[in-house]
Image 1 (cartoon, rainbow, N blue to C red):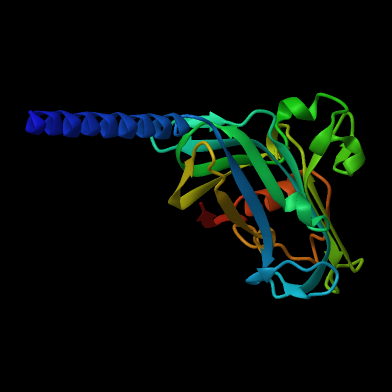
Image 2 (image 1 turned 45 degrees about the horizontal axis):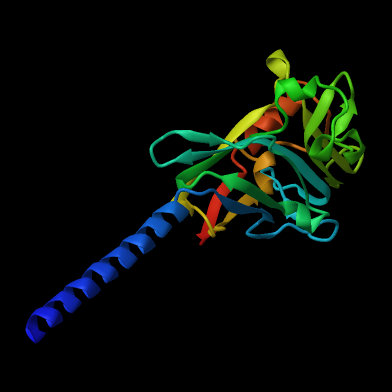
Amino acid sequence: MNNTLLRLSAFAMLVSCTLISCDKDDDSNSNNTEPGTVNIEFKNRAAGNNLELNTTTYSNAMGQDFKFTKFRYILSNFRLKKSDGTYYNVPESYYLIDEAVSNSEKVNLTNVPAGTYTALEFIIGVDSARNTSGAQTGALDPTTGMFWTWNSGYIFVMMEGLAASSPSGDLTFHIGGYKGANNCIRTSTVNFSSNLNVGKDKSPELEIDVNVLEMFKAPNAIDFTTLSNTMGGPTSVLVADNYIDMFTFNSITD
């Protein structure tokens, strides 16, 4: 009789442990289906180091020395590529990154569906619909200084600087435009070398390098003696074709 009771007791404990284990598994599975947050930091870099305004001298592809005094850009229409090849489109994703404002380099994507992601895609600039929507708020507020007029739309990338090779001694690259042959909207894709895992209580850190000197390199080497000032039009297109390669993957920290 005692042996029977012992066997029954052992069986009851086994069942209890199994149920508890199942509950834990269910909780874990439940957590893995709830959305999470992705924290992104865009690191503006030049010649392998953090970009410095006003002080550090850099060289373009022509070997011409120059300094940055201002560097700002708008990124929009973020979407994350899942491991199955589908995309999650981040709603209302418009961000102004300003080298003079350190906190602006950090972007937090909240309520991202749980899953495994392999790439991030975004527009460098502002989509055509928002270019024609008049005064807006947040990163698209005209008071940020990235809006020409209500009729002509947004400046996508703003670089200002100093260069002895420039006829005026100044550099003014205000890249924008969304119509026809002068369309400067570009889409950048950053592929991850390791997976980005998102879920409840998970806030992975994604770091992206922004290699700012790319805007003056390939495929169009910019010569400051002949191009030091552009505010839209064909010359801005040349720069836009260059800066599509500025964004590269650095790291993911879970």
